[in-house]
Length: 549
Image (cartoon, rainbow, N blue to C red; front, side, top):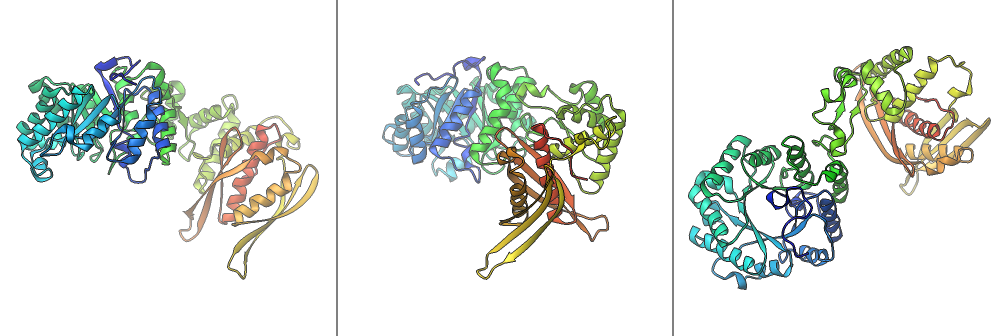
């Protein structure tokens, strides 16, 4: 790839969305990308329409050197690859500096050079003077542009340096631009800026120099996204971000929030229109590669970004979803959700029922009963906001109970009926601890007894139940218990405690979550496990009714 400008982005080279997930984002504690991971991240960023992807520091890190070598075989639709590095060392020339040579060897068409722009860092960290620091910038930029590379300058610690000594900070920028740098990126390296003061500085720099300016913000004040947007409003035409805000310390400006704001709030088509609905999907895919759970409350793309809990909100949303959503969630590939909790009113439950495929609009008796039931259960520790499958079963049970169908019809019968279960713990002589469970159930007009062992009581109970049911329910072989969460809740008396268990199940097509609550952890787990199987039975047209309370 020889081009140095983004392809297919609506604003072309006039505005840059620059991603540094693979360099600055990789400095987040807990993230370690393999070369294969880095290539996968780059492909996803290209899919979402990012114009520039900073791939790392070739020469300084062998993994990054390998990444650039392998990335030459990639064909990016939108993005240009960028190599990151520093200016030449003091006391040598750019053409003789191995680190600068490594930037050329990467064959990246664009290079970002980092240079200190704060006099205190120049004198104390670099241990040189401002004249030599500017010469280091000028020589390196001139050398790389002379070799056909496009160069951006990251002015490190710019805002702190400008506040301390503006003349020095501007001298560094001027040295870069006079040598051929296209963009001078103002870096809030310590992340200490606030939007108004930062915007004032950006505007002043542009007014005094006329240079093309970019922005790079850390999130130490929690203002990285706001600072980035404020910089753009002040005239910056190049914005550096990381996926999901990954980065050192508190992180960087989140790519998805910045792009979401620029596109939906400022009307700036900074990525292709077809890429905007892909923001949520790509955000979650990048989280998987980083092996970090997606932030459910992340702006625009989090699963809770458009989730509503209060009954007042739900009443308004029933009239018009935009009354409590700042945008249509589908614009960024997300969905609105209604959460059902003790705060739920009739509107909340009616909307949630519609979402789950249960029509409560024309059944006031069922709706009234369901609202009462949810509030009662929530008061005793149940939580349905993360357990849609259990809630759906409850709603369907209330609809069936309020219908004209006779109570003894098989439409209300679960696919199995519990007679009893027993779980014992076996501490063996070799120190191994094994749980054993026995279940007695009635299924398909038969009484079945099954026993199984497991590495814990819930595992053993699940295994025994499966052993009893699989000969009669062939679909059960596809169901897996994929996650199990326990929370101990304070009891009403203050000394008691009840246990809430969430069970996440999956098959080849979907995932669903069920909940159980009881003073005994095994019974709470049993209730959640049963609901999981009953919900699956419903989906394969088996007779269904929840066995939860």
